[in-house]
Image (cartoon, rainbow, N blue to C red; front, top):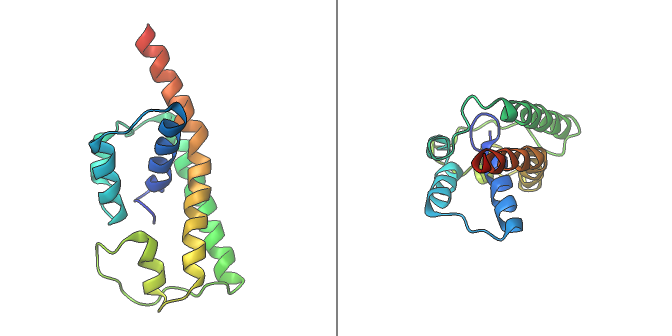
Length: 140
């Protein structure tokens, strides 16, 4: 799972894309939490951003998980990739995790960025809505 439960890496990329489109820079808190997330540690991201129990984010978390699982099932069923069979040490970057666990199946090097892109696309409209609500609440 990329970035923990709910594909939080897609959420992190959506936040990054949103800030870049606004012409704003993200701080060290974001950068450090994303670096930790790459190594299977989503807790700093969860602590840095108040996303727990946010009902707006429940929908993309469920959608990105279900769509990513469906992509994986279709890839295995169509024999683009093979099931992962080997154990990989904890802390291995997620981008390489499936590749190493499947004994270097090259299909995973294409599949993982695809899953991340789909997850980011699912999260982006919800990130825009969250920031829009934040701006409205700050003005009030």
